[in-house]
Figure: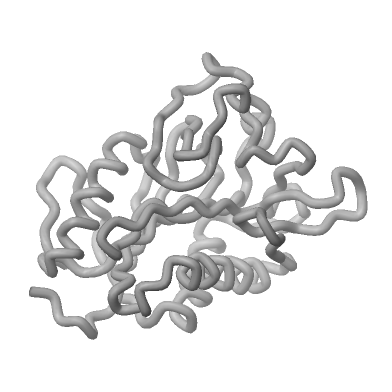
Length: 231
């Protein structure tokens, strides 16, 4: 059994991780966390270009169904894009340790992302009725989304997570209506003039994470060809 006060494992995968393999690992790890057979994990990675459809996705919001692979996802939300230059962070956290409050958990994810973006010189904000983190722009469309949140909680353990646009090809978002928001655009650190690498973003995310969720410890990247184990 994993000690309840163990630090959260913090893992960064090199290269691009296939979406289906990542999803299978997350589900197994979340079940292991619930059983007490594995510790909490924050997993940072990149995916190859793809679209995912959350539980609220509308068919008409998939504008280019043949552009990239499309995956049905058990997370909340609508259509989103993942791809190179975007830092995806999957959070397998035990909400039994955090008050069993999903609304508070999403709020904490927003606080974490806003603090990390501030560290990188970007003022992020939230909007009522729109999950994620937004940036106010002087030019149209006025508001643009820089970070998405899409989580699932099963038996009080979370999986899926957040995605921060560091320097992706923003034209790849044109194949969907991102998160169902037709009136608002998508931006990145690069499009805002911030010269940040994925490693820079990782460091900022880690610095901002601990004050919100607790201490972390480095862990090896998940091996997707082996069963989930503790650690």
